[in-house]
Length: 425
Image 1 (cartoon, one colour):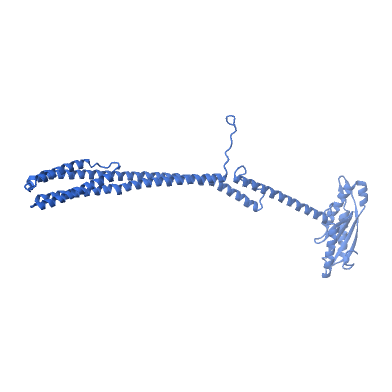
Image 2: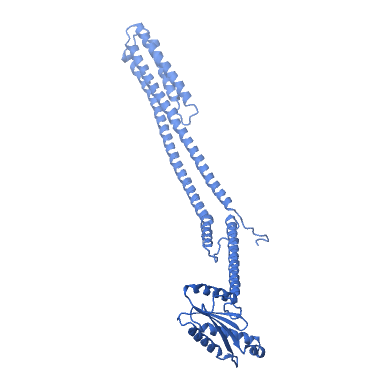
């Protein structure tokens, strides 16, 4: 409890984690893409300004300088003209250059309108207007060509031309400086953009790495552990501990379902083992005497039939029926518990006295049956020796607590195939 309230555990499904991770990576990708687009747009605009505006403005200024130079050459033609028509032609050429300069001025002003840092044409215009006024004054005063000598006019007009041309040079230098500054600005923008993109890419890489580590810890490793547990269960192991049972997401539900499967498989295997054990016990009870553990009458009949079936191959054997003497008084005087103990002891002695390949069975009460293979070829003599050995074993006193119980036995012997081959006779 915290502040009197219950702290609720945050429950997020695997699908929610994957969707959230995908969304985060998608947002980062979009941010990087948008930022890159904006940066490239800014760079493109600045580059366009350099290419479409500043370079054009530089060309216009150069063209104006050329027209100014041509205007000065036209003045030279005017000064050297010998006739009126020649002077008029030179003046027309100068006027054409003046109009070209005016047109170039208009283009420059229109091009640079609204451009930050655009150099002003005012200084040039002031000098150019002063130069034009001086030119017009000279032309007006020299109607007959009497003032055409260089000594009379070249000095003043030339100085005005030089000053006007220097004004254009100053504007061009300012333009070049502005272009250089813009280039530097573009370089700074590119550097900053590259740094920002690198940082964004690094952030995306870190986010992706964290997402990979998180998904590996929350999904991949638990799934590998569950798969290992399922593989061991498939191999028949039942002491497998299913991991991730306490999780409350899809993996937890998968682990819980696997645990139910494991428990059911273990229960089914236990039931199968119990059924098999019960079946084995039932088979044993059906084939053996419950008290002594010897084969019962049914097994004896089957073994006797099998032995008689092998008689045709030249195999001889003997059948003995053994009854205990003085057994009824033991039951009557000492009780059935002692009688059962005596029967079990007799059964053990008979089994221990027989050779390998022979069988002793309890037919019921104090009656036992023995099938002995004749491996010596002596027939009846071998059977008599075996019978005497059995009788001697039975006659040995049996200790029951502080008492001794003595019983005897009577044995009947039949030889096969000499005495017959019918098990019922």
